[in-house]
Length: 168
Image (cartoon, rainbow, N blue to C red; front, side, top):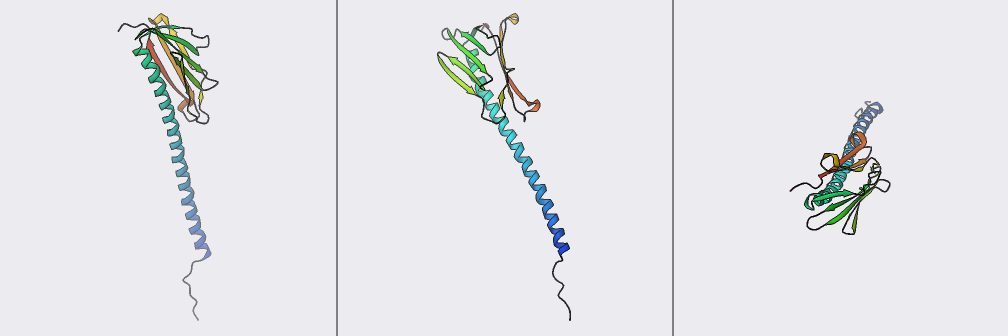
């Protein structure tokens, strides 16, 4: 009497299970890697959008309003008042609040708070500051530094620069 030997042995079944498990684990790691890259890219995009919005608002006032003077710079470099002469004399105030993660910009009595994006571990660095460099023919330099573990060197910084009382 002959036995039917068309089935698979438990060793063959175990080998198949190990091969399939190895493929699944490697695919899982690949998917996690792509997901992490996507999250980092999303953080970068939000921070760049934030920087562009703030720069556009402040820089357009500086250039279009014709910045004529910088006063009331705080000792820590977190606040300053800017005077413009176009179309008429007006003032704005920029205040950096690292402990709250907000940059406030006041114009004509209206204050707009630019809160940093609500991303875990994203912080406004206390190294951010406003500088007025009168020795170089009057020049204002605003440095904003954001920190996050996913940034290269853990920081992302941008600057807003403008000459003071330039001839146009």
